[in-house]
Image 1 (cartoon, rainbow, N blue to C red):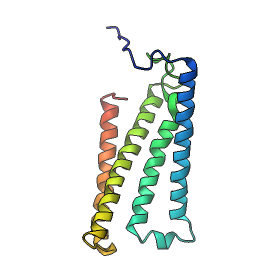
Image 2 (image 1 turned 60 degrees about the vertical axis):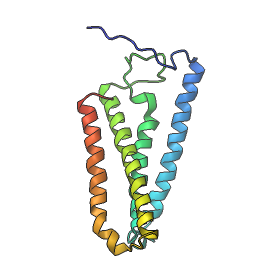
Image 3 (image 1 turned 180 degrees about the vertical axis):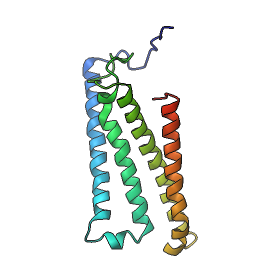
Amino acid sequence: MSVEKVSLPYDGWSDNQIITLAIVNRVTSFLSLAGSGYIVWKVLDPKHREEKMKKMYQRIMLCLSIADMIGSFGVFLGGWAMPSDSLHDNFLYQNVGNVVTCDAQGFLIQCGYSSVVLYNAFLSAFFLMSVKYSWNEAKFRVVEPYVHAFALIVTLFIGTVSIVKELF
């Protein structure tokens, strides 16, 4: 059985365009890593950690930022993690990986950014419950373990299914 190469929108791109895209992806993902890293550092700063970790908003932002760092690291890897014998070698730049590194990268991006989406939804729900329904920290503490468990279980499930079904 032969594999047929599928035409992609960027098949006609020049080498300069491909290199520019690779550089832009790495620069923007690095900036995202740095910004999220700063938020993690501010929340976990030993001088204020105890005070900040008492607030659900800070804990959601911590988890959101960690998830963003995971996804951004996967994007930062770019073509490096992709197999060097890819069908779309004409588009990939500096791809030196293999199937395992490609799957790992896909897993990082899938889990990281799926968690970002969920934590953004949780953050919106947090503000809704705080402002409209006057929830306090005590009420949030009751639901918080379920929020984190849901985010972890859903994203790991999606990432695992994607690897098993060879979707990366």
